[in-house]
Image 1 (cartoon, one colour):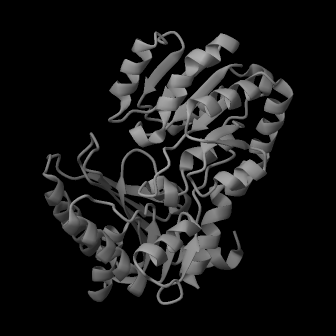
Image 2 (cartoon, rainbow, N blue to C red):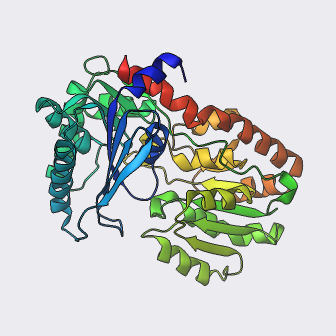
Image 3 (cartoon, rainbow, N blue to C red):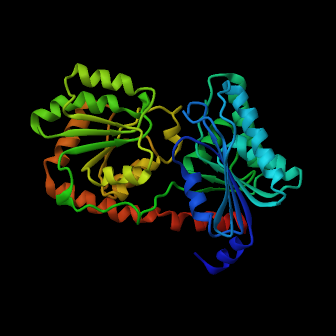
Length: 390
């Protein structure tokens, strides 16, 4: 980090406000900034589908955590959750008595709250950190309109917009008719990793035939084609196993499919793993990873930068994926990944080709290790913060 940026940060009072599930870039930004700024307020609001319902606040002063507070635990209807999030955000920021120099909101709604606080003189500058963008975010017309209204207000009034991928700016231009040059500058701040933290297990010490998936288990994640392919894969490579890390609404459907295909011995559902370090260890012991997203322009992934792919690469895992996330072609060119169509036939042939050819598998693994170093948070956040503070 440049010394000039370091000096600027040390004088700042910063607030990060985010909706949260388990992990996410806002938490990584909290880790990065906690001992680099004068004070840091981190406010986390659980998503409506989260098991945890309590919003929380953490406050750091001169690098030390001095407040770690959870709000009341009460389950509310979806619409009322947003009123609760707004009330707590205002209450915690106003009650602190400090003027926030830099407020970073990780979606249009919470960033818009920052703009309201700016009008009240409690915030100096606001950054929208766009974690997701999709034309139809909500089926309800009114909610979807509000989603885009907040996003548009942020484009007009924020200091800078941090997008996970360049496709987000393209999406706003195409679907919202918002010219990139008209409002706040939009810069790409890709998802990163703590590259040095992820274990580096040598090729010979890994589970030789283990395929791994990590993430929120939804139908759009495409695990159906992975499981449907296993009988054909097992005929050629009988030691093949699939490890599924995570949980989600489609999990039971996949478990039923596994049972129907009599694959219980070859598929392990690890469930929700609380510590990310434990997940990284499980990844580093595997051999190949999958990100077989279902092609759909209404999907978050079409415009986003999926974090799990960076984690796969940092663990030295070649990725079998569909051409949905913007990063797909780039990592294919770097020979870290193989792009397939959304079908079991192509998935089967790609997995068998990799697992049955140790020399190719080893080379793809080396390429993944090498390429992942570009995405260390220590390289990504300074660039983004320089733009926010310039």
